[in-house]
Image (cartoon, rainbow, N blue to C red; front, side, top):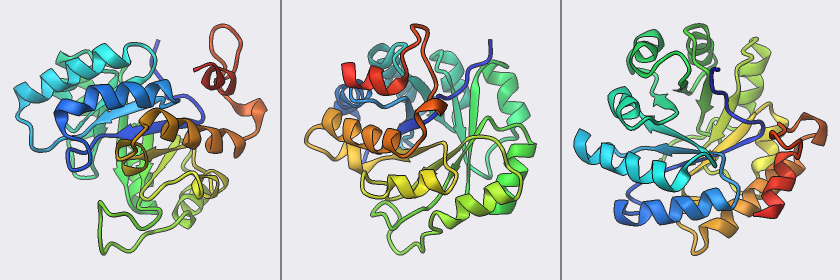
Length: 232
């Protein structure tokens, strides 16, 4: 059965500038315990072998509690039995990547415009990472698109899940959810926190408060994600 991302979805994107690789498994595990649904391993500096080892370490701590995606490297995602791949706008075609990772894997695309979103969705992406929403230190000087970009993408008929990224905090996450996001991806607000578990829990709580309870994905026991989060 093909995998899918939960709704709403809180994604953690890794960044060695915020969290060094040797601390990542522990901090990612804490974030997942706090409510993170998906971890995206992004490290452009690691060679393939080291990236594979990092992916395996994350697989061990994430287990089946959250999805694990590898940024760009379909070969590493397949070798580590990760759940999918996150691709940039200029990466390999989605169909080529799917041939490597398998038809059940999740493939996301990063987009920054309405046209980019329409093209990525038409090419078969399972979800889109849309940014940049708000000013962020990871992209200094970049003019944010704001939540309005999400509204324009939805108005253009794009129906795949949209995850907002860029400067997302517990104070503004409701804005992106109201604009049509299916969730949000964060870096600094969790990885740079002294308590990643508490930071993730705060974000997830604010996200859950911004969506109707009837629309939350339910797990096999019938309890919704809000209850699962509160039990952690």
